Length: 100
Image (spheres, rainbow, N blue to C red):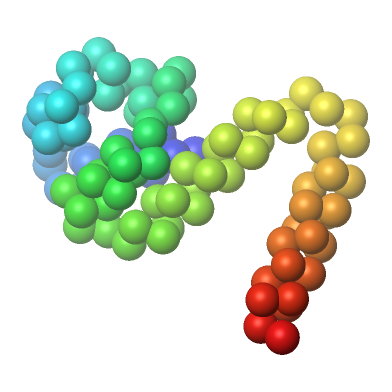
């Protein structure tokens, strides 16, 4: 599920209008609509604000938001899966190094 799809799902479950969330984010409704449709990326600060407004886990939204960004970078690369495996391994290694 993409970030936009998740935001839409949460917004609809709370029976909120796009314009309500847009106003809280201090953006216009068309821009919010583009974020929901995946045509525009939300800023990190907006993701955190949305988590608060939608009463959901900020880490969940940040994870989906970041995954969308990574996907946008690698989606047209033939070696995308290999690059993601290397990145995952590097992340795990760097986390282990911090704990030593």
